[in-house]
Amino acid sequence: MTFAVFLLLLFMAVPISLVLALTALWYINASGNTVLFDSYPQQLFSAIESYGLLAIPLFMLAGELMNEGGLTSRLINVARIMVGGFKGGLAYINLVANMMMAAIMGSAASQIAIMSRAMVPAMEREGYDKSYAAAITAAGGLLSPIIPPSMLFVLFGVLAQVPISEMFIAGIIPGLIMAFLFILTISLMGLVYQYPRGEWPSREQVKEYLLMGLPAGLIPMIIIGGILTGLATPTESAALASLGALLIGKYVYKDLQYSHLFEILKRTAFNSGMVIMLIAAAGVFGWVIVFEKIPQNASVWIAAQTSDPFMFLLMVVGILLLVGMIIDGIAALILVVPILLPIAQAQFGINPYQFGVVVCLTLVLGLLTPPVGAGLFIASSMTGCPPLKIFRALMPFLVATLVTLVLLSWKSELVTLLL
Image (cartoon, rainbow, N blue to C red):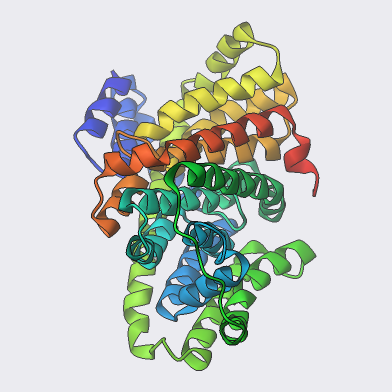
């Protein structure tokens, strides 16, 4: 009955945080354990009582400041120097710029929104099909939860009680593998669609782009460098990145005005508040799941299906693809980690970092798959292209992502090599 209430609220388009919180309340009342009502507020608070979660609003703030301060456009120009002259140059620029933004934003949805505004009109002017341009931009958003920093990695680190900095390091090689497969996909598709040939910047433009792009490039260096060297925690790196984006946008590029700060902070507070509320509600729902011994029952069922770690991870990928289609990635992560991580470690000896990277990447695919597909609708609203047309153009990139997941499930060394 509790599951039926959950599905009913979900398909009534009730916000997912309220779905989780109300379903937990229903369960407590229906089970007769009304004494649990006394623990309900405590469980809500304990789900967000973690220093590591401070990184989430700070990374959001860094992304907002970068976009408002003109840092995004300068990074795109740096990408022009690297790949702009190839056939289909704007497609490669889009992907490389997305990689740079992934090293700053940490949020796939925010990255898709920002890059759709920046890249799709330019690609359309040069003769690219709008749906294809939107698809490349949306696919680039898949790099955000795997190239550090990543909000999903922050949350997984809190849930799995592993160092967030090491989760970030674990995502570097998988992120590069996925970017390589995306580049290969663009190259193969270029043979079919005959992209327009790009133009290399002139020597004067190269000097200008490098000079103007260098300050913007400091932001990912601050984030990744601080974490890799151990000089700063992920939360401290996010705070330094926000400060750097503010100073560069205001005093170097002069695109950012202090009068804009209130709106920037308001958007950051609103967006991060939704995430934190979701984490709190999902924490309560996860408490109900543990109380009902669902992890133990799931463990028995999975053990009866396979004893092979690779097959187990493929089963997890299949299950989470379905889950991610209807539930927000953050909520799904909070629900599945307490159930599946103990099974992965105790019964199959799977490294928690390998498990975390596979789970986070699988769940973010839900952003780009119907029926919910928030990323599809973000790209559609920013470009005016129908979501289904974007989804059809996205298919080769989704296949490349699945290939990445199979590789990461097969060889744990691809995740743990740098640890």
